[in-house]
Image (cartoon, rainbow over all chains, first blue to last red; front, side, top):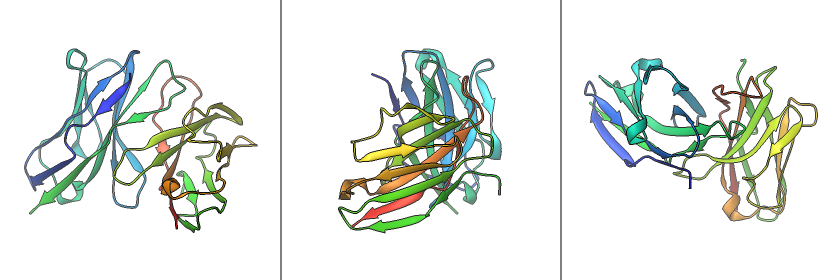
Length: 114
Length: 115
């Protein structure tokens, strides 16, 4: 069965420290991978995407993610977090054999402390 | 703005009432998606439109849920005889193409509360 797993429900990080959010997927077809961020009461904002090519992708707000096919992972990283990065982060996967619908992980809530 | 617009932002209804949620996608976007996001969960796919054609409704939880996009632009998600488990945020997303992958642009959602 297809699945997207975000193992960490909640992460607390100090401002200025590095952040890594994990995402693992199980998909039969070639996956397309996305990270979205959601602030309270808001919709989802796309941080970055991976379709093909270079496995290290850069996104907005200083985020990057690395696609590792052998590990079925697409982890999100940021070298130095800002208080404004506090939000919920969702990994999402789509595949070539669908119309473009996305399957989302359950999300990781990030809290940033001073 | 030029983003995806959803209305109303909040909707409270009594159990058994019918509700209608509206989505205005980005102008010219071919693809339109509806997702349901329960509290503390990730969004779950409900249905997909390519222009006015509903090509995938596999995620609709029951026959009480109905979606339409009659002119290929604005879409309405209707829930009949609402139940408490229908309480969730309903997100609409659009993308410019009908094939290949393009990122989806999300609206801010409609928060539905069923009393």
